[in-house]
Each structure stands twice: as C-alpha cells, then as structure tokens.
Length: 206
Image (cartoon, rainbow, N blue to C red; front, side, top):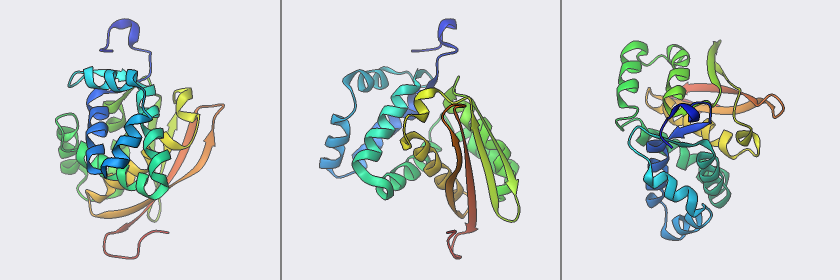
C-alpha cells in the first residue's frame, strides 16, 4: 500500500521498518525464528516483503508482528529484541539522516531529545495519532501517544515494543532508560509512558 489519496487516513507503518523487523529475526535461534514466522500470516509477510524502500504498509502488520515476537520470546527477550531492532533501524536510510541531525541539535542531553521524538514517530507511522514528549525534573520524560489506531490497544504487545524502542534510542546518547506505562485509555486510544534515565555505567533506573 503506497500512499494514494484514498490511503492517507489509513493507519500505516513504513515498509522498510517492518522489513527490518523480519530480517532481525535471523539473529534469533532458528527454532525461535521459525516459531515467530509461523505465527505471522502469509498475507502480512507477503505485504511486508512487497513494500518499497520508502513505502507504507498497514499498521496492523506491525501489531501482528509485535504480538508474534512478544508472545513467543516472553517479556525480557522481547524487550531485548525490540531494543536492538531500533538500534539497527537508526542506521538505515529511512532514519539515519534524522538521527544524525538530532545528535547535532541535541547532543547527548536526553532532555533536548524529547521534543524530537514526535518527528521520528511521524517518519515511521502515518495516520497513527500523535506523539508528544516533555521533560520532568530531575531525570524523567513523559511521552504521550494520542489518537492511536484501535488495534494498538488490543493488548500490551505493540505498546511494549514502543517502550523498548525508547530504551534502545537512549543508548545512542549513553543512557540506560526504564520506560513504564503510567496511564492507558482504550476508549480514548491513548497511552502515557514515563521514561527515567541514568548515565550508562551508573546505577540503572529501577
């Protein structure tokens, strides 16, 4: 699905982002990779594979793949997978320019990176609501996602993958971060996450 006028209001995710997720399954033991792929429909796998470099595919593909990964790997291994996935994604042509610009603008100060998260979200998702983030002293950020597609609220898996991705992003600037859900409203299709960080090499946030 590549962006004609009729698709602009359909929740979508970048095909390249999803192709990266499928490729990253090869980092897992073969039995894990096979089990996860078997839990993803052939329609979704074919749609992801057919996507163009900067094209879009249905957001439901991301939800389905996140669910398959998380259900099979369990909480900790799924967290590690999604944290590592975003670290690989920022090196692709889709995100590399944005990340390099953010590093020049905000340096290694996580407070200055928070307002930029919404721009990164818009690079990956379309018609999937809005992300805003603000600093809360002394070392926390409040991240709000509003107007999410209803399928994002069906279970905790997609939201968990997003939280893990934020943890991965903080590693780029030398911080360990814990991200937790502080509020979730299925009726309003909104979620609030709180990120708490510490410089790497110090006591990790609890």
